[in-house]
Image (tube, rainbow, N blue to C red; front, side, top):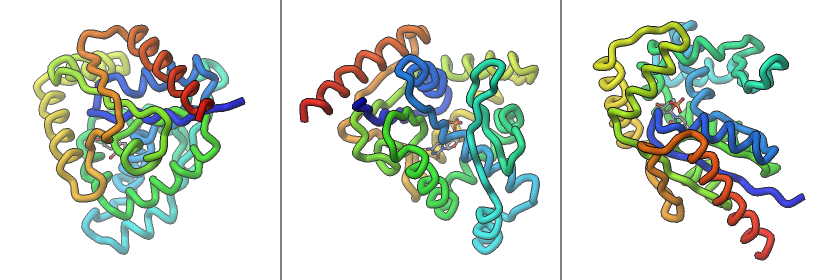
Length: 230
Ligand code: DC
């Protein structure tokens, strides 16, 4: 069966991951949460006190990091494993969010993650979400989307997500974190967040999750037909 690659890039907390996960489920595709990979690296660096400015330490640490996604048999959720341990909950915490943009701006970290992502997605039939999927990881993806949303709406969504996991965080701290990450993600030297020329914009500010999934599935259908024709 013909399958395509779907690349979803955009700012944090625009609904990329939830949309990507649901689209993958509907289409029977795999899902690769590339942000989770950078979060897992951040957790490892934190646990092993890696000095981010020490290139040798960073390279050595990267050699010892193995990241995989495994499906939870109880709820079907894709969960992140770092060196065989389930770190899904830990990597979503604010102390990781506060450090991840700095870690993901390191060239060696990006090279290692991009190589893994290309390996994981090489057979097509995957939805990937991140910051550089359509521009760097899979520039030939048949469908590229760029998600945006109002920063206040993004902060509210993130606050709800965190509180559902038992982490109560002040909205001002979340807005600060989002602004900071946007700034680092868009201005870093190594593959900054930017819209690929041929990506389609989706502003999710006033869209429900169902509407987002529906929109992406329709676009995926069109992209698949086009790929079959060519
Ligand atoms: O999507 P997320 O919020 O879980 O991503 C966490 C961080 O990882 C985000 O601040 C930027 C970085 N990231 C990246 O640089 N490239 C990607 N492909 C995905 C995430």
